[in-house]
Structures are given as C-alpha cells and as structure tokens.
Image (tube, rainbow, N blue to C red; front, top):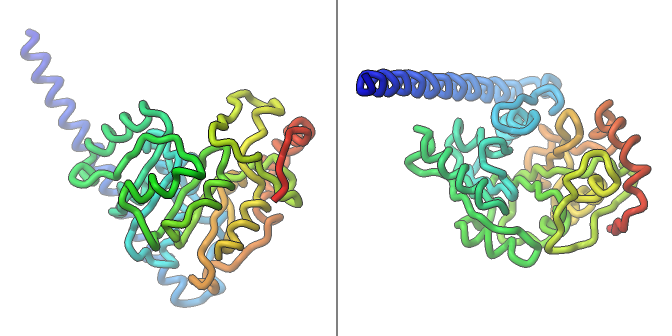
Length: 295
C-alpha cells in the first residue's frame, strides 16, 4: 500500500512540475511579445510611448517593478544582461528574478541573512531555466566599505545593465561608494515618508538595522529621501525617469542613454499617489525629529 501511494505521489509531483514549467514558458512568451510591441511603438510614433505608471505588473517583484523594468529594457535593449541586486531576500520576491528566470539574465544576488541565501540557491537550482547556470547568491552584510569587494568577488564588473538597491538603511552611502560597476539602470527604494523638498538620509552606520515596528517614528528612520537619491545619482551621471505606483521604488537611467524615449521627470511627479501622501502625513510628524543628515 505504501509503495502504491509513493508511486502515485511521484506521478502527481511530476504532473505538477510539468504544469508549473509550462506556465513559466507561457509567461516568458507573453512577456517577450510585449517587449516587441514596446519596441515597435518606440520605433514609430513617439507620442504613443507609455508612462512608467502604465506598464507595471508584478510576477516576482514586490510591487510592479517587473513590468517597469521590462518596459525600460524594451526601449534600451540590454547589452550584457548582467544584473546585481543588493538585499535580494530569498531571490523569489525581488526586482531581478523575472529577468533572470524569463529573459536569461546573469544575476549576482546578495543578502545579509544566511537562511535567505540558502532558500534562494535551492529555488534557482530547481527551475529548468536557471538550474544549468543559476545566479550567484552571496551571503554578506553589505556596507560602504565592503560593497565593491563583494561585487567584484561575485564576478560583476564594469558596465552592467541593472543594479537593484534596497538595503533599508545605508542605501545612499552604499550607492555613493559603488565604483566597480556602472549600471545602465538603477532601481532603488526611497523613504517616501520624507517630504519631496528635503534631501535627507540616515547618518552612515555600518551596523544599522531598520526598526521592524509599524508606523512608529523609529520605523520610519531609515534609507534616504527621493531628493537625496536624485542629487547623488545626478552626480554619478544618472537621471530620474519614474517611480512605481506607490512611490516606493524609483528608476534612474544613465545619462546619454535613450533620453528621447525615457526623459527625465521631476521629483514631485513620483510621489503624488494617495498611498504616499497618507503614509507621509502619518509618518513624518513622528520621524522628523530623528537625527537625519542633509546631503
């Protein structure tokens, strides 16, 4: 009886696996067709180009970053398909997963929790599209002092297509320190509680850990404002091209790349959504008294 149940379970597992692989295949085909549609629009009537707010969708990203990145890299075709993600979690819900799984990108993923890295390695080793050459997943606590060494140690260097940065703390200082890669596109999280006219970040502390509380002053004291990240990115040669629907993640493109297709936008246009206004109204009165550093 046990033997029969075991064989039945194995057959069911194979069927479920085949169905999952078929679903992934269909998703990849649909996304690639969508990329061709975007490219056709870009080569024709420029007035028909879409706003980043109109192209978002979520497959592996936390919000709709998957769709926005697909759109951006439809307009500026990838060069080497190399992506680096700092604080990728377990790699199953992150900004680079869709590109790695469905579009054959080469990933270099980092996270500070060993359990996340272990889960991520197992996840990619089991997918037919990534098991042959899975992304390199590194367990490390990322600081301004070690970030360049870590990236080089993973094998990424020079011009790459994408950097995703979301460390919930020293984001500004880590982005400022990075010089061993020059991403064509940067997506990073910003602290939307901080008003758009303020260029603020937390003071640098290599051991900083964000407060896990909800809607407390301390829980809002992390990261940097959009204006701060815009100023730093401009210094490094990048322009702001848009944000996710809730203003959590913002997108920068290296200056000189497709400026007619992805023009610069202003800070205010990226944080006018109801969600951002509500969380700012609740959070900034509590967070404004913390020791922010103006940059």
